[in-house]
Image 1 (cartoon, helix red, strand yellow):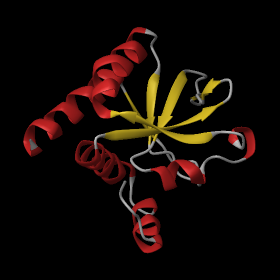
Image 2 (cartoon, rainbow, N blue to C red):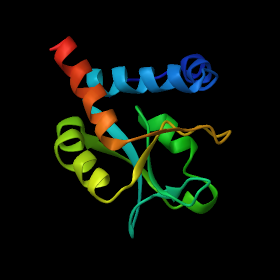
Image 3 (cartoon, rainbow, N blue to C red):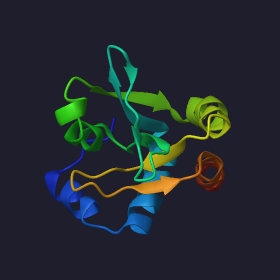
Image 4 (cartoon, rainbow, N blue to C red):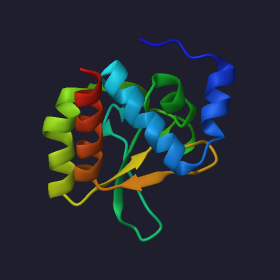
Length: 130
């Protein structure tokens, strides 16, 4: 597991959505894991401003832990293996019409992405580095 320094975390959180998205895709491919939040009842999800369902994910555990507050206070950052993510999760989310909330920040910034677009982007990055 990658150890993140506070300065790196702060710098990444300050970036704009497209930059955070690119960082997410690169880190997920490099470290071969996506992080979600899980409670005893299951995975945490949310909804966007139009009430559409979304599934939040982060590239590393510390970012996910930052959002385990308020409604998600009983959630634990939990990794999902990247190959399970792209082969099972993303097609399932697409089938269920659930968008992916990539890299939500404590300030409420998110990048909403279609699951199949995210799958394509991660697969391209994995192919590039393998």
